Length: 141
Image (cartoon, rainbow, N blue to C red; front, side, top):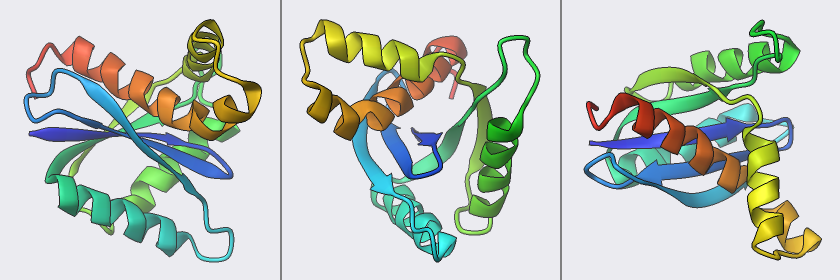
């Protein structure tokens, strides 16, 4: 069973997918959000869900450092609720505190240029969100 990881931002959505056994997460793509019509974002994700036969979606939930949910977290929750109308999957909200920071550090340590980092940072954050979930679930998907 495959899982999909989403790093939902205001302008982009980073996407990662697991292998069929649910052991590893691989970066798939970054979708530029459609500001006029959010249904286009949902349709693009629904196509990926179908193409990869995804059964579970792990959506990054940005929390404040004290564990509370702020405006960004609320936007991610609303996004997940709206996406449920397009895909028949189980949804998991996953604490994503510091994943973007960790992804940026990883890319810097790999000597990736600033320009290239900007293109892949959201996809890398989605990988970290999904891999964190997969590690935690211990392949009990």
